[in-house]
Amino acid sequence: MTEQYLKHEADRNAMGIPALPLNSEQAEGVCELLQNPPKGQEDFLMNLFTERISPGVDPAAKVKAQFLHQIIKGEKSSPLITKKKAVEILGTMLGGYNVAPLIDTLSNNELADDAVKALGQTTFVYDAFKTVADLSKTNAFAKKVIESWANAEWFKSKPALPENIKVKVFMVEGETNTDDLSPASDAWSRSDIPLHSLSMLKARKPGSNEEIAKWKSEGHKVAYVGDVVGTGSSRKSATNSVLWHMGEDIPFVPNKRRDAIVIGGVIAPIFFNTVEDSGGLPLIADVSKLSHGEVITVNTVKGEITSEKGEVLSTFELKPNTLADEFRAGGRIPLIIGRKLTADAREVLGLGETDVFAKPQNPVAKPNQAYTLAQKMVGRACDMEGVLPGMAVEPKMTTVGSQDTTGPMTADEITELACLKFQSDFYLQTFCHTAAYPKETDTKMHQMLPKFTTVREGVSLFPGDGVIHSWLNRMLLPDTVGTGGDSHTRFPLGISFPAGSGLVAFAGALGSMPLDMPESVLVKFKGKAKPGITLRDIVNAIPLWAIKQGLMTVEKENKKNIFNGRILEMEGMPDITAEQAFELTDAAA
Image (cartoon, rainbow, N blue to C red):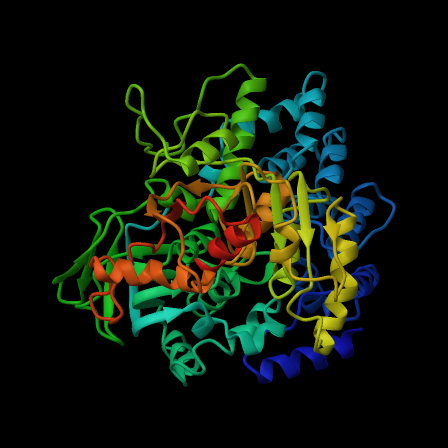
């Protein structure tokens, strides 16, 4: 196992990327060697065991958690891992397979305090929360865990967003779309973040990755800066590549990074959300005075970007106002899960709401407030009459669609979220992009994803069964809100908010999804279409009339787009069929 791994590692290092995380068989091999480690390999084996096994409910994580639990119970031993150390390592695994062993250790008086500390830092506990809450009635250590969660020690123990961040500007002028950052031709490698990152900007700006690597080797933190950033398809792989090149390693989580800085005059909403979900810092600011290769300081308190001479080059606001908390927690998704855990723990203890977290600044509805149809639909999914633009809400996701080019990434995110059962009413996995001409990696994915989906009580189609859009258009769900990992995701009755694979995973795993409610644009059609007018003509008429009204421009400089980041609501055309309505909204993407 060691020889094979070292050869694999050398091959990957030659490409400038780390080895893949250990699989379950390799993890078993490491556990075997740790019981009687060969002389001189002690540090190597411990690094593999602690840093190169993915957390959550990855099969290798199950092997790791079971081995540590056996050490704690005295069933196995290692000269490198004491019982106390075993509890400490369990506490680095985020959630999932490590939770039950830690709860069991709360009844071990010698190690219970260590288990309290480890569980207090673990937030992906889900149904196990009730187990700890019930145990806290008779076990003082379990009560300490509840108190730790209630005090948000998992959050307060993390470093806050720095006031000043010095970065070197990597400027990509004009508009960067997600295909520049994650080319469709390299879709086969998207779930392998380091490998896929090698394709970033290869057509748009060749030599970029080498230049970034050189700057980092000189000690610079690098920020991605552009006029317009992240337009196009909802690919988290695009964000992953930026995070890989600009971000920092995450302890105990192999081959993922966070803490990247992205500055754009305009940042596409889905890309913005994906960066904040992943622990990056997206900032919208005028970049016209920022130059490629320039060293700048980002002051997150004053909202200023200054040169090395102290000249103010641009200003910004931290939006949403929870962004600093999201960065501190490691991303918006970990923050949401952790905040709920803290709220649940405080309820068990009879405590009021904590003031540790920033509260979302939501607009307040006026008396007799009117809402658009979209605002009413999202409101229903939030048990509200309606939702105003700018509100931070978490609507219930009735339907979640995952397609194949992003499916493996979504599966990785679901695994890291420690999800063993989908909470959304309907989760659909399709194979519409890779069925016709599958590569070797696609064939493996066709075998893996159906089982991964169905074991979590989702629905999986098979290669050749059809396109995700057609299938979702046949469903009566959702009648409120749903999401999908494709920018063309649409429903015949409900409203769709397409998202990157991280949010799709969250929606499937938790049954809801964070949403900053966008504004709406109303497009009105009057009369009837003349003979010969096709649906495509109607689609093309929408941007044409926006251009005529000065609400949309073709030129990249000072670009206008009234539809960017907004909900498109349409009125009129009462005679079109449901299929045509679907095609019309699908084309709007």
